[in-house]
Image 1: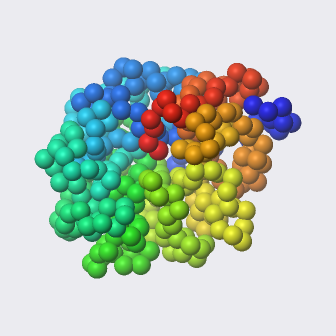
Image 2: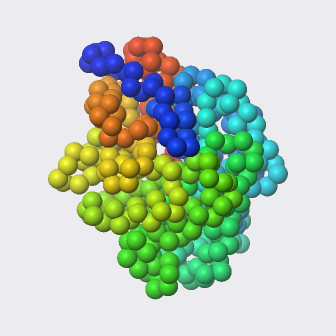
Length: 371
């Protein structure tokens, strides 16, 4: 970490945060990062220890790696964790216990990968992959569009996962609506060509997500936090855009706010980049300005290379001056840290205790991580 970091206090990162139904000890969030260490979909003691280490070293809120809802085509690896079935839920209950004992809070990220899943993928190779219009991220027709009955079943599966999260003691849920996965496939015009109630303009294409939020809210009650992660970029298409202007972003966000989203996790690859040309606000900043809801920023926090950089495999620690200034100015409320925390479970403690010279590099080539 550069010497310039010592000139800026990190105090803002460690102030408590409280909103209408979410309270955390500080502003640091562990970003969701898929690891593939849950054999047969069941997180074990090693997974619990992995999250506990981050909590006991000062991470205020942990968002788990993507966890698969109860649908046969939700995932593409037998080592990705399920969020259904007695064994998997018991494993997650133990994770919650360990994180709470370490003083942290934790929410599961509920996930369905949609038509990013290749045909024949494990653990259910016979299952057909699904998406709103049967189109993959390139716009190629792969399968038939989801029927309205199938959509209703998916919404129910998300709501059941939300109910299970509340039952086993999680502190909220995050819905993965980013990066070209199922919910995002409904959002994006390239993958959603539906002419029924789940298609249309940018506001109409939020209906699937809005119905998931409403169903989840009915399942968990008014006080259980619901976070929605969304992005402009998609897997392997970093130039993709859901919206081109603040006006379109407002049209997109309004139905989701009305449905009951409590916090927006606005995923970008580089937090310091402006989202639109007429302002320095990033995506989280614009989201907060337009909705009044708390937002989480993310994107290469604490490192000098973005996720999947083409300029080199080693990301080195970088100062947090710009991030802290924006946080102090109220542009966003919480800060999600990904690779820096993956490389170093003590990252938050080292930042707080001015141990920047001990921070770890991140070797992109040696660790496969899906955001």
